[in-house]
Image (tube, rainbow, N blue to C red):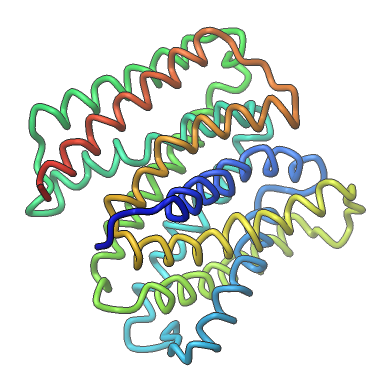
Length: 295
């Protein structure tokens, strides 16, 4: 891979900002929409730019091929369940906490990678990083000012959503020989098919008159934070590789916390800051161990 240039770092920062901006927009979307509807609209609008790119690049979408069950399963675990859990949890949890909780994905993936892959085993540096990172999450749950008996379960659901991302990522290894755009387009199609009947029959969104800010946020969540972000991720992966792209993990919880304060004036306590620092340090040690393998 080529040596990263200023433009590459600019694109990486932009990707982090887009993904981090999803959290406060989810919060705004919950003012008018149910959790299933938010999840459905995210995958619906997110599928548009991805499928358009596949059409322009003449990449075949294999959503209904002989591997359809893998696409359906990954769509369920990697999109449907986490999108629903995050939206449900953010209704009663500050969006900046959701950003920190979701940033544990690299830590969870390291744990699962140890058990389900051959070349991602624990070492001292990874173990230290995991312990520091999750210690920060445990400390975050002790912040009684922001997490109490009324929203404790919601915070756990968000954490479960991050784990679903990891499981979906492991399952994606089963079809890793296929193009990224094809896989993403296919799982988005299946996510739309799964969520459409659930959202419309359970929440009946047509009966709701949504606020303008909620409508803008849910369209942004789909088209930008899901669709455009995935395309930007593809570009960074092709140009700079996985190790460079994975550095976005450091920036998302930081930007998520800052943006939530700017747009929603959400409270940032000392425990939030300490937890944020601990998670970033944990991610750093895990990523440093991965990087050392390639040097």
